[in-house]
Image (cartoon, rainbow, N blue to C red; front, side, top):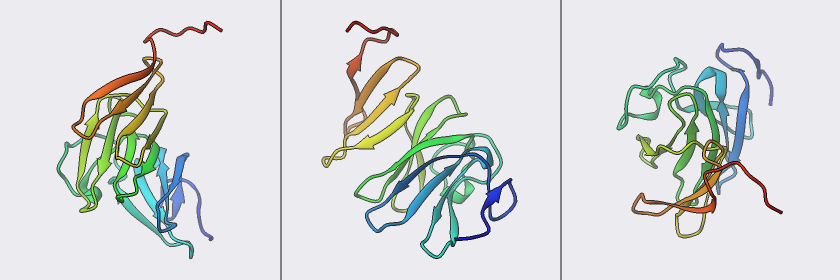
Length: 154
């Protein structure tokens, strides 16, 4: 792998925030300050999956390459191939890219980590509200840990 350095030009990263592998071994990375999510193949070939490189929010229902992001952070690739990521600069929302390449907002929960179980339930660590939330398949969130109050009682 070569040619990847800090910056915002083609072939450059600017503050990569997270990485994840899919079931085929494709590496996904959130390029925070370039406002995009990329895949990186074993031969070093990078492909933009979502993000225009211009910070902002231009809605849901658009193809990944037409969707604006702002400071993407933690990401996770589900076994189904759906990509989930925190669109950190856009009001702390978790968004997804479907297998068909369409971007949509999943929840308005801030995320410092995202994962899923075998049934497809999302688990989101929410540092703003000091909670861990499970998002069911129907889109309902249930707090499974935390009290919405920063505290430790051990």
